[in-house]
Length: 389
Image (cartoon, rainbow, N blue to C red; front, side, top):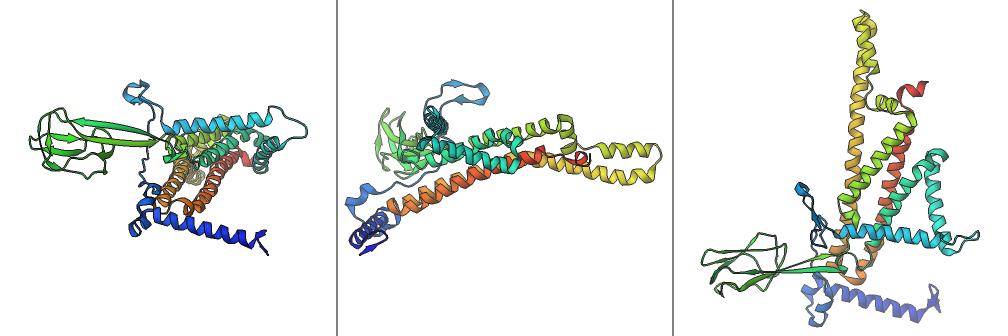
């Protein structure tokens, strides 16, 4: 007999393996380890997740920017360059020996480009579609590739950088009180000990406390009294760094405004979209010439048009915020969800959530690129007076 294209025996074995792995996942997770304590499986357990919204540095400061702070390479910066290298490398390898009858890799690359181009041209038309395509396609490909790379094992906590920092006592004494527990996370400058001499031992860096002394322990001047360990990933999705979604949002909005001014002319675009004072000034002129009845209706219309222009200007600025926080919020929430699930029930149970993240990455890339395309189409469409000419 066969079931689902394989023999019943193989199917039963596969189900048993999945059930065993699910049980191990539960036992090694945070919930199961409290109920079933098996020492041999402790090495498979996952440490509790720690979320840092700012990107973590992976190098020492390279140079100072004065009042702007110091410049260093962070993990999201590396991830963004890795994304660029993967995209450029893929399309270069796929097309460097292009043939009339394409191979599999060339067909894949051409299929991606053709699908995106058709998507843009169907919405914006052939002429505008060709103009919008480079920006829309770049946004889509970068966002989705970065999201998918972040699911690889070496991203996040897969490969980490560890920093240990010791604190030396400046005077001899006895530990009078301990403010934190061993293994607890502390912030830089947070008090860990207070000695009987009144000396406060502070955390030198953000991290977890190691080798904590008990109350009453003797301390000698120059002795290491506490070690703080900090770990952060070498690779982290650039979509979860607020700076990257903000950069893409600024790029999208700037290009939308540029396309609008190029299509309609700078003066017409600004006066019909943002600063439409024509009706107001016309009505004021009529009022000064004594045409009160004609001026009154125009004044009301002019004031409304000025107010609408102000709202339009505000909405274009709000696009930057909505673009940024939509991508940042969804991708960061997805990463936190994976961390929590892997911590609670690791290994095989977390696999469906990776599938969910694949869908979220595609949807977010499509939404960001799609909204950029929609706003671009609106920007190049004649407004106000142009519609009647």
